[in-house]
Structure formats: C-alpha cells, structure tokens
Length: 476
Image (cartoon, rainbow, N blue to C red; front, side, top):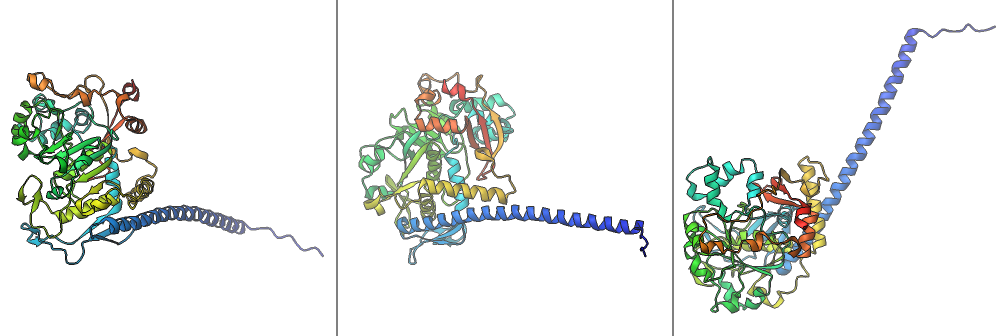
C-alpha cells in the first residue's frame, strides 16, 4: 500500500530558510574573524619583529656604553627605554639653586625617540630661510617677529619692515646641504682641551664649528687648532666678536636665537656671512650652544667629531680653556646624553680620558644596525599613533610648500649694504653649483626628491615644513 505524500508546509519552508540564513551568516562571520585574526596575528608578528630588532639594538648600545662611557653603565628597562647611571662615589657637586637639589647620578632616556629625532636631523635644514617663512603658515606674520628682538611687536603686521631686519641674514634657500661635508669637528670650550694636543686632528676635518668667544690663535693652536669655518654665537658674544674673528673673513657666523641691535652693529663692521639658526628647541638631555652646534653639524656632515665637551667627575665649576672657571650648565647630565648619542652613531667623542683609544670605533653600532633600528622605531611609532605605515620619508611633513624660482632664490643682503658688507662671501654658499657638491650630497638631494625639511616647532617628530625644489633646475 502506497504511503500518502506529505506536503511541506509554508511554516516549515520558512524555518528551513531561516536556518540556512543563520548558517550562512555564521560561516561568513567565522570567515571574517579568520581574516581579522590573520591580519591581527600578522600585525602582532610584525610588531614583535620590530621589538626584537630594537631589543637587540639596546643590547649593543648597553655594551657600547660599558666600553666607552667613562664609568657610565646602561640599565635596560624595555626595548626603548634605558637608564644611564654614574658609578657610586661620583662626586655630584653641581647644585641647582632653582630646584634646590644636587645634580643626579642617573638619567632616563627613550632610545626609540632619540634615534628617530637624530636621524631626522641628518635630512634637515637648520638655517632660517625665506622659503621656510613663505611655506610656514603665518610664517612672516607670527614666526618672523619672534626672531627680531628690535621689532618691538609680537607680529609682523608690516612685512616690509620685517624683511628689512632679516634680509641681511636670510637666504632664499638652504645655503648648506645634508652630506655637504664628510667630517666635521665641533669644538667646545671645556678646560679639558688643554690636557691633550688635538689641534692638528681638529684642523684635518673638512669643516670646523666653534662656539661663541672661543679664541683661535697660536697660543692655543696645539690644543684646539687654527681652522675656522662656522661659529654659533649668542647675544652676549656679539660685542666681542670682531676681536675674536681677528680678520677671519670667511668664517660663517650662525646667530643662535634672535637678531638684535648688538648683532646689527657687529654685522655692519665685518664682511663675514651671517645667518640665523632655525630655532629648534631641544629639551632632551644636554643644553647650551654646544648642543646647537651638534645639531648644525649633523645637518650638513656625515661624521661629527666633538672635542671639549667632557669634564672630570667631581668638578665644582665649569672650566674653559681660555678663561677663568664660571657657572654654567649641568655637565654630568650633558656627559650622559652625549655618551648616549655616541652609541647611537650620532657623534664621536674625543676626550683626554680616552686619548689612547680615540680612533677605535668598532664598539659603536654600525650604520646598517642603526638603520634597522631606526626603521623599527618608526614602524612602531606610526602604529602607536594610528598612522598608516609605509608613508615613506615624507611621513612627518605637516606642511608642504614649493620653492619660488622667481626671486625666492636671491642671496642674503640688502640694497643699502656698506662697501664692507657687499664683499660678504654669501655667494660661496648660496650660489654654489649643484655639480660642485660632494657626490654624497648630490645623491642625497636626488633621493629626497629635491625636498628640503625644516622643523616647525620644538621637538615633535611630525611637524616638519617640507619645501619642494626642482630637481631639473638644481642639476643644470
């Protein structure tokens, strides 16, 4: 007997459809979760690789400081942070009257932040230019006024008046290029210079940078050399600068802070080129004109050797090689930070405390290792900041501008310059043919696609003003 056929009810069909939809949705959800898990795992793997690279780099930095640190030791906190400590028994006699404390014997640093900052300086311009003021938002109205002490106003409402104040020391475009010199000596003023005869070694560099009123003469020649190329000066040194220059007409003066009446009077009486430092505020580790000189050197030199930046532990006053002791900055803090910079490959320290081994740099991390650490630190920073990775070398450009080839490239100077000032050798730097630059400087310019990088404010890594130049016009 045949069984009767059962008809599927509409409600049953509806339930089956719902089940199918639920199953499909579940499968699709699992698929999405699998994709997300794969991406998350991939990102975690990449982040883990970067942390591993930085951890290995930290170990190299620790070993470098143990070998070269004048008794300092590095204590690693994580892949970025470490603490530098002076040995027990170091006589901390530097008293900070403001905070009523003696100088501490240990200092905390973020190596990832430091390597990003200082590798950035290698690609930057550190001299104030017209193209920077043109590109920066309200550059002439707000920023230019901060660099002119004698203006007597907070803003340049009268741009023509501000230009009159700045024309004499405002090049249209960067007068100095990254990689322009292979080796540079930055000579500080420490009395330790008298303990060693570094003079010939200092003079063997492609360029020498000095500070303020440091004399260059036969009396100190065997200790500090006679070569003079650049000098970073502050307001207090302006009145004595003519005597200090002693007829050296090619030495380029870089004014550290602002132009003012004392500088104006000095500039009128010399033929030397004069520029304004771009005004970066560095609040990390070490202070003073010496730190700015290192920033300047790193922006135009491949190798930066520093002399006269160390003092013996147990000091009571800051000694200078050419004058009586005086109060100054915190040398222990400076020594720690300079030692960190040496083990990051930024500078090479020359000191009487290590004169026997001053040419051995094998324990400093290699450029290849530093490059990997820099890339890892940059990847981690961008991921932490929620930025898209792979932004390339211009990922920190906050503001863009284009170099104006119609007049913006004019050299420094004003129409009312005296006969003496008209002989200023600005053109040596500002009209230098592109093919006269070192091959490394030319290659770097092409690699950077003709873009000049400037800091906008402070220490932020992501606040650059980037100005695009024409590769064709430069190469001609």
